[in-house]
Length: 91
Image (cartoon, rainbow, N blue to C red; front, side, top):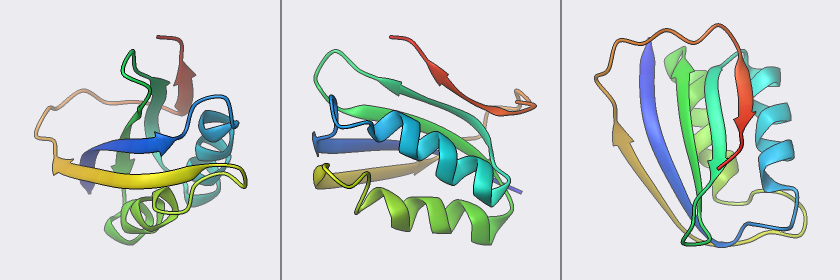
């Protein structure tokens, strides 16, 4: 099991990034959430199997069709909260 916090920068708000991230995470069987931040970036908390989490990280470098990703920061997260699904969280 792997759990990461991902921060995606660039043109990632107003381009359906969260909706596409939700779809990708569900396709990969991940749990957690995606949310917009006040600084214009998007945060993702993802937990699941190592290869699935890595696939989501790879996807974040491209993002939704109209996104223009400039930077993806990933950090391991040691928290022990359990998420039962993946959802969009309103900021």
